[in-house]
Length: 184
Ligand SMILES: Cc1cc2nc3c(=O)[nH]c(=O)nc-3n(C[C@H](O)[C@H](O)[C@H](O)COP(=O)(O)O)c2cc1C
Image 1 (spheres, rainbow, N blue to C red):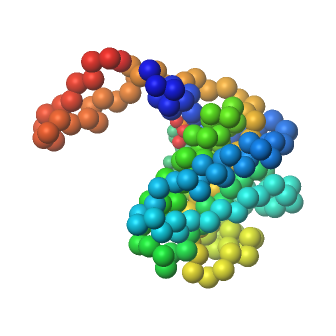
Image 2 (spheres, rainbow, N blue to C red):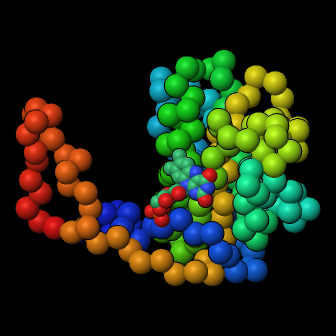
Protein backbone atom coordinates (compact mmCIF):
# COMPACT_ATOMS: atom_id res chain seq x y z
CA UNK A 1 0.00 0.00 0.00
CA UNK A 2 1.25 3.51 -0.73
CA UNK A 3 2.37 5.70 2.16
CA UNK A 4 -0.25 8.25 1.10
CA UNK A 5 -3.13 5.74 1.18
CA UNK A 6 -1.98 4.66 4.63
CA UNK A 7 -1.98 8.31 5.76
CA UNK A 8 -5.43 8.89 4.25
CA UNK A 9 -6.78 6.00 6.31
CA UNK A 10 -5.29 7.43 9.50
CA UNK A 11 -6.31 11.07 9.07
CA UNK A 12 -9.37 11.75 11.18
CA UNK A 13 -10.97 14.98 12.38
CA UNK A 14 -9.56 15.82 15.81
CA UNK A 15 -11.55 18.08 18.13
CA UNK A 16 -9.63 17.63 21.38
CA UNK A 17 -6.11 19.00 21.68
CA UNK A 18 -3.19 18.92 24.10
CA UNK A 19 -2.05 22.18 25.66
CA UNK A 20 1.14 22.11 23.62
CA UNK A 21 2.45 24.54 21.00
CA UNK A 22 3.24 23.39 17.48
CA UNK A 23 6.93 23.71 16.68
CA UNK A 24 7.45 26.52 14.12
CA UNK A 25 9.23 24.17 11.69
CA UNK A 26 6.17 21.88 11.64
CA UNK A 27 3.74 24.76 11.23
CA UNK A 28 5.85 26.10 8.40
CA UNK A 29 5.71 22.75 6.57
CA UNK A 30 1.92 22.79 6.87
CA UNK A 31 1.84 26.28 5.35
CA UNK A 32 4.23 25.25 2.58
CA UNK A 33 1.89 22.37 1.72
CA UNK A 34 -0.92 24.94 1.26
CA UNK A 35 1.22 27.13 -0.96
CA UNK A 36 2.04 24.07 -3.09
CA UNK A 37 -1.64 23.41 -3.80
CA UNK A 38 -2.77 23.23 -7.39
CA UNK A 39 -5.22 25.95 -8.40
CA UNK A 40 -7.31 26.73 -11.43
CA UNK A 41 -5.21 28.52 -14.08
CA UNK A 42 -2.57 28.68 -11.36
CA UNK A 43 -4.20 31.85 -10.04
CA UNK A 44 -3.65 30.88 -6.38
CA UNK A 45 -6.54 33.01 -5.09
CA UNK A 46 -6.04 31.78 -1.53
CA UNK A 47 -4.38 33.48 1.42
CA UNK A 48 -3.95 32.12 4.92
CA UNK A 49 -4.17 33.81 8.30
CA UNK A 50 -2.21 31.95 10.95
CA UNK A 51 -3.61 32.41 14.44
CA UNK A 52 -1.61 31.48 17.52
CA UNK A 53 -2.58 34.40 19.76
CA UNK A 54 -4.59 32.89 22.63
CA UNK A 55 -6.79 36.00 22.91
CA UNK A 56 -7.87 35.53 19.29
CA UNK A 57 -8.15 31.71 19.54
CA UNK A 58 -10.56 32.28 22.45
CA UNK A 59 -12.84 34.23 20.14
CA UNK A 60 -13.01 31.53 17.47
CA UNK A 61 -15.76 29.34 19.03
CA UNK A 62 -18.31 32.12 18.47
CA UNK A 63 -17.68 32.01 14.72
CA UNK A 64 -20.42 29.39 14.60
CA UNK A 65 -23.85 28.83 16.07
CA UNK A 66 -23.99 26.71 18.19
CA UNK A 67 -20.53 27.78 19.36
CA UNK A 68 -17.67 25.40 18.66
CA UNK A 69 -16.22 25.50 22.17
CA UNK A 70 -13.42 23.04 21.41
CA UNK A 71 -11.92 25.51 18.93
CA UNK A 72 -10.40 27.64 21.68
CA UNK A 73 -8.12 24.72 22.67
CA UNK A 74 -6.35 24.50 19.34
CA UNK A 75 -2.66 25.34 19.30
CA UNK A 76 -3.06 27.13 15.99
CA UNK A 77 -5.81 27.89 13.53
CA UNK A 78 -5.34 28.63 9.86
CA UNK A 79 -8.08 30.73 8.32
CA UNK A 80 -8.40 30.07 4.60
CA UNK A 81 -9.54 33.11 2.64
CA UNK A 82 -9.58 34.00 -1.04
CA UNK A 83 -9.60 37.03 -3.28
CA UNK A 84 -12.78 36.23 -5.19
CA UNK A 85 -11.93 38.64 -8.01
CA UNK A 86 -9.11 36.31 -9.07
CA UNK A 87 -11.17 33.29 -10.13
CA UNK A 88 -14.72 31.96 -10.01
CA UNK A 89 -13.60 28.59 -8.63
CA UNK A 90 -11.92 29.98 -5.51
CA UNK A 91 -13.99 27.56 -3.38
CA UNK A 92 -12.39 24.58 -5.06
CA UNK A 93 -8.94 26.15 -4.86
CA UNK A 94 -9.31 26.91 -1.15
CA UNK A 95 -10.66 23.43 -0.44
CA UNK A 96 -7.69 21.74 -2.03
CA UNK A 97 -5.20 23.91 -0.11
CA UNK A 98 -7.10 23.29 3.13
CA UNK A 99 -7.14 19.53 2.77
CA UNK A 100 -3.46 19.45 1.83
CA UNK A 101 -2.74 21.19 5.14
CA UNK A 102 -4.79 18.53 6.92
CA UNK A 103 -2.81 15.76 5.24
CA UNK A 104 0.53 17.39 5.98
CA UNK A 105 -0.55 17.86 9.61
CA UNK A 106 -1.49 14.18 9.84
CA UNK A 107 1.87 13.21 8.35
CA UNK A 108 3.60 15.28 11.05
CA UNK A 109 1.63 13.60 13.85
CA UNK A 110 -0.68 16.56 14.39
CA UNK A 111 -4.45 16.56 14.55
CA UNK A 112 -6.65 18.86 12.50
CA UNK A 113 -10.27 19.67 11.83
CA UNK A 114 -12.03 21.67 9.15
CA UNK A 115 -14.45 24.28 10.49
CA UNK A 116 -16.82 25.59 7.84
CA UNK A 117 -17.27 29.37 7.58
CA UNK A 118 -18.81 29.87 4.14
CA UNK A 119 -22.63 29.69 4.27
CA UNK A 120 -22.67 29.30 8.06
CA UNK A 121 -23.92 31.53 10.89
CA UNK A 122 -21.99 32.93 13.83
CA UNK A 123 -23.12 32.97 17.46
CA UNK A 124 -24.20 36.63 17.18
CA UNK A 125 -26.44 35.81 14.16
CA UNK A 126 -24.13 37.50 11.67
CA UNK A 127 -22.61 35.27 9.02
CA UNK A 128 -19.54 33.30 10.04
CA UNK A 129 -17.73 35.07 7.22
CA UNK A 130 -18.56 38.55 8.56
CA UNK A 131 -17.67 37.50 12.10
CA UNK A 132 -14.21 36.40 10.95
CA UNK A 133 -13.72 39.42 8.69
CA UNK A 134 -14.45 41.68 11.64
CA UNK A 135 -12.24 39.71 14.04
CA UNK A 136 -9.24 39.51 11.71
CA UNK A 137 -9.71 42.78 9.76
CA UNK A 138 -10.04 40.98 6.43
CA UNK A 139 -10.59 43.54 3.64
CA UNK A 140 -13.63 43.67 1.33
CA UNK A 141 -13.24 41.52 -1.76
CA UNK A 142 -12.05 38.55 0.23
CA UNK A 143 -14.18 35.49 1.00
CA UNK A 144 -13.58 33.32 4.04
CA UNK A 145 -13.96 29.61 3.44
CA UNK A 146 -12.88 27.66 6.48
CA UNK A 147 -10.68 27.38 9.53
CA UNK A 148 -8.24 24.51 9.76
CA UNK A 149 -7.78 23.84 13.47
CA UNK A 150 -4.42 22.33 14.39
CA UNK A 151 -2.74 20.85 17.43
CA UNK A 152 -1.36 17.77 19.12
CA UNK A 153 -4.26 15.34 19.51
CA UNK A 154 -5.79 14.65 22.91
CA UNK A 155 -8.10 12.01 21.47
CA UNK A 156 -7.42 8.86 19.48
CA UNK A 157 -9.51 7.92 16.51
CA UNK A 158 -9.37 4.68 14.59
CA UNK A 159 -7.99 4.56 11.08
CA UNK A 160 -10.66 3.75 8.53
CA UNK A 161 -10.34 0.18 7.24
CA UNK A 162 -10.30 -0.14 3.47
CA UNK A 163 -12.91 -2.90 3.60
CA UNK A 164 -15.30 -0.43 5.27
CA UNK A 165 -15.26 2.06 2.40
CA UNK A 166 -18.50 2.59 0.53
CA UNK A 167 -17.61 0.98 -2.77
CA UNK A 168 -21.20 1.54 -3.98
CA UNK A 169 -20.03 5.05 -4.83
CA UNK A 170 -17.97 3.69 -7.71
CA UNK A 171 -19.50 3.36 -11.17
CA UNK A 172 -17.83 1.81 -14.19
CA UNK A 173 -18.25 3.33 -17.64
CA UNK A 174 -21.98 3.78 -16.98
CA UNK A 175 -23.81 4.98 -13.88
CA UNK A 176 -25.75 1.73 -13.79
CA UNK A 177 -22.66 -0.46 -13.69
CA UNK A 178 -20.65 -0.92 -10.55
CA UNK A 179 -16.90 -0.96 -10.26
CA UNK A 180 -15.42 -3.82 -8.29
CA UNK A 181 -12.39 -3.25 -6.11
CA UNK A 182 -10.64 -6.59 -5.71
CA UNK A 183 -8.08 -5.76 -3.02
CA UNK A 184 -9.77 -4.47 0.10
C1 LIG B 1 -16.41 20.91 3.78
C2 LIG B 1 -16.28 20.40 5.18
C3 LIG B 1 -16.88 21.09 6.22
C4 LIG B 1 -16.71 20.65 7.53
N1 LIG B 1 -17.23 21.41 8.54
C5 LIG B 1 -16.99 21.06 9.82
C6 LIG B 1 -17.38 21.91 10.87
O1 LIG B 1 -17.89 23.02 10.65
N2 LIG B 1 -17.16 21.50 12.15
C7 LIG B 1 -16.56 20.30 12.43
O2 LIG B 1 -16.37 20.00 13.61
N3 LIG B 1 -16.16 19.47 11.44
C8 LIG B 1 -16.36 19.82 10.15
N4 LIG B 1 -15.89 19.03 9.13
C9 LIG B 1 -15.26 17.74 9.43
C10 LIG B 1 -16.21 16.59 9.10
O3 LIG B 1 -17.24 16.54 10.07
C11 LIG B 1 -15.42 15.27 9.07
O4 LIG B 1 -14.45 15.34 8.06
C12 LIG B 1 -16.33 14.08 8.79
O5 LIG B 1 -17.24 13.88 9.85
C13 LIG B 1 -15.55 12.78 8.58
O6 LIG B 1 -14.76 12.49 9.72
P1 LIG B 1 -13.18 12.32 9.60
O7 LIG B 1 -12.63 13.64 9.12
O8 LIG B 1 -12.72 11.95 10.99
O9 LIG B 1 -12.90 11.23 8.60
C14 LIG B 1 -16.01 19.45 7.82
C15 LIG B 1 -15.41 18.76 6.77
C16 LIG B 1 -15.52 19.23 5.47
C17 LIG B 1 -14.80 18.50 4.37
